[in-house]
Length: 160
Length: 193
Image (cartoon, rainbow over all chains, first blue to last red; front, side, top):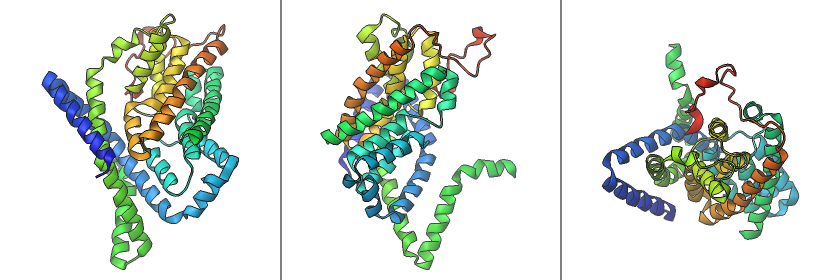
């Protein structure tokens, strides 16, 4: 069992015990809420795991290394930022993809850029965003977030 | 028949994958076996920690009063408002487009422009359920570094947007609502949680 599993299982157990001690009904309501959320994301997550499993087999690590690895330089950042901005992948299921990219040789900086643009910039959802925030604010938000994402990626490259 | 097809349509990929796997194993097709092994490892990894994250998230949801937080995010809320708006965003779940209806509600309740954009930033990348899964897949160091680097950038974006939109008549709109009937504002949008 991974250390992650141990951390989350212990934390869940402690919080559940405290919560149960304080208020039994609330705890049950919380479990139900969590179960609903888990159920909602399970299927898309399993689907993406299928794709990742196929991709891990089909895409040779050397290709990932070439385009997103240490030697990819600015090109790797560019690819990650553009793909991340356009792609419409729910954040939950992007983590297995990111983890797969890292395993196959992509750098932390590039993966961070990809993840950050993915969650902060939404080209596909821009029309929807304009309906809520108006054209001016929506475009400004996406442009600012795009640059912020690149800063995050570069900074992570320096830190990790 | 049609409804049946619709009901099972979401499972089509899983079913196709199941069939392909069975065929691969019975014919001894090695690539298929390898792909299944990759899949099995990922599923076990997923089940080893993700359900527990949702227990934690569900408990947060019932114990932390989000409605109370929403009242303290106005123009003069300062650093405390920023802190609370980040906290509020962290307690949400779901994709970014689910945050816009919440932004609308916050705007109606008098949240400052700055705090709305800080909310959108924190919502997009600091939600607790997401952080849990991120830690599981990419490690504590990565998650912590990304979050700590992102946070000041969100605050900067909030300040920049406030300045940029100053003097314009910025409004968060609700596309689902007819402008003629403001009294029927939907204060509990579906995408909020």
